[in-house]
Length: 280
Length: 314
Image (cartoon, rainbow over all chains, first blue to last red; front, top):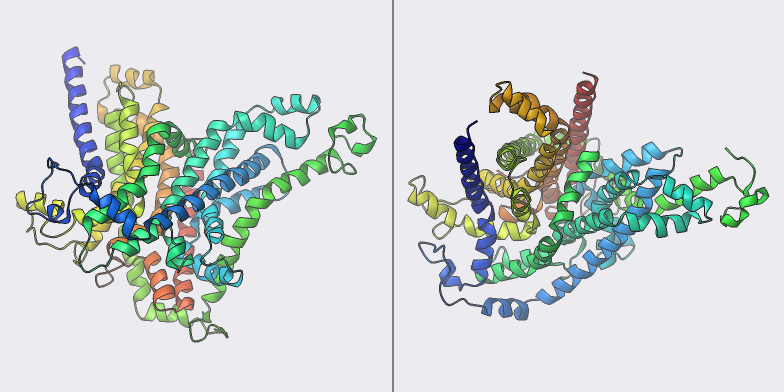
């Protein structure tokens, strides 16, 4: 290929990519814009794509002040935070166990954990609801954390197992010779080395828990126990007249934690997504 | 292997809590101890309820009969089949899953090939394309609900200007367009996941291999077919299976966009299970839909594994 042709194809690729990127990112732009507009501006015909000069920030204070929004937010933060911590702890323990030890039932346990992802979640909730009701776990954040753990654990365990597989065994043997017990070896020698993997699992757990709508919809019935996704959906969808600007500012605030995470840690997000599949 | 009890060994200082068992036995105990918390949660929240759901699916279990559920002679299954409901839910699910998975893989492949291996801004593109995945599903449903609104929705405005359709056209309440709408939204949110996988896969291809093929006169299509595709095959296989499972599970986007309607046109197995169990409170029937769905997924997985093991032998 000549130099000129190569430059031309490169330009064509950039143009195509930028066009596709614009389409993909447009809905996000639309959320930002909608949150800064009044409802009459949003429903104006024809729709205006560019922002007007005077942006309207009052939607944010309206959403935060009027609804139970802050309660939903607090619940979501508590549930997601607990899910992250527990998912990491349980994931590290189980992943390390599968990576380092050979025992009867290991293969069955590993396949079993992976197969959980196939279980129809809605059908599980039918009996889980009854089971949780018996233990007072309906309308409880503890119940939600337990439920969310099952979405992130299969991934966390497999991902961390693959991660530990990549850490040489010699390290532990050396630690053993130096007199470190099993616990100390795991927590003081292996865990620090697995930090990038733990970070990726934590992000994944956060995304899954923060995004969950279905489990929270079934397992909470009282308004003050709802998390953000259910709270937003119930406050805004199905109304006779849509409060679009309220919806979009609520959406902005709900997406904010993930967007911040994304700006600083997108590398680990990508790693979390790909490594599991690459290492299989 | 050292079979002497640890207590008799020199290295007693290792302080195992199981000082009367061999090191090997202590290892196994420790391994199970590490597994215990995760297994406990998964058994209680997943395995227990799924076993129970299978049992429920053979019972008459509604709000009226919940205190005394009785075996009802496959009534739930027969009812689902004879009313034609399960066939409809099945058809909807197949249309939805196939369309979403095929579209997101084709689009992601195009974008991944455009990004390729040599673009200097490759990582920036990869990160920016990942952004839709960070938008919560409920928020995704809300913003697309706005975009799909008749009259002032932007999608209709653009299609109206282009002369494709009238700006008053309904999407999510239109029996013909509701399914395409949920498919478009699902593709938008999931495309980044597949894209990231494919970009990572392309990076594993040695540049020299592609260049050598080019020098030998292979065109872009042949390079794709004979070099890139075989390298990507394992990743495509894994992410394809995950995408199929993920979309069988898809609930949030469909529920918040169309709630399964209009006229049950977007009623997939997941939505139908929810409707039967938590709207009509016929838990037995809901569980039966769930069981059928589980069986289908198991079959798909088995076929995938079989295909995979066959291709590995070759």
